[in-house]
Length: 127
Ligand code: SF4
Image 1 (cartoon, rainbow, N blue to C red):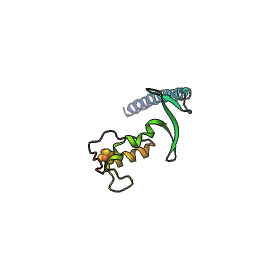
Image 2: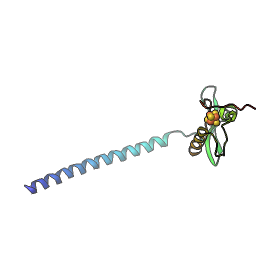
Image 3: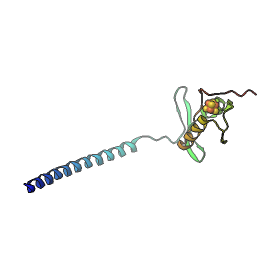
Image 4: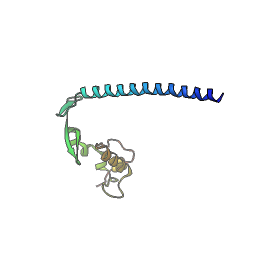
C-alpha cells in the first residue's frame, strides 16, 4: 500500500518535471524571439521631429545624463511653470513646497522634467 502511494507520487513528480521542462523551453523560445524583435526595432540617435507641428526632440545632457528633450518645451519650462511664480516655491530649502519637492525628487530619480501648469495650492508672489 505504502509502496503504491510512493510510486504514484514519483510518477506525479516525473510528470510535473516534464511539464516544467516544456514550459522552460517555451520561455527560452519566447525570450529569444523578444531579443530578435528588440534588435530589429529602430533606435533613433539623431534628433527627430515628432508630434503636432513637428516638434524637435534631441538628446541633451542634463545633470550628467543623456536625455531626450523636447527643445522648445524645455526652453519654456521655467516661464510656463506656476512654481516659478509661486511664493511657496523655495528650491533647495527645507521649507520648499512639499508638492514641488516631491516632483523634483521624482524627476531627479527618473532623469526627466515636468512643468506644473495646474496647482490647487498656488500662491502668487505679491511683489
Ligand atoms: S504650491 Fe503648487 S505652484 Fe506653488 S510651488 Fe507648490 S507645486 Fe508649485
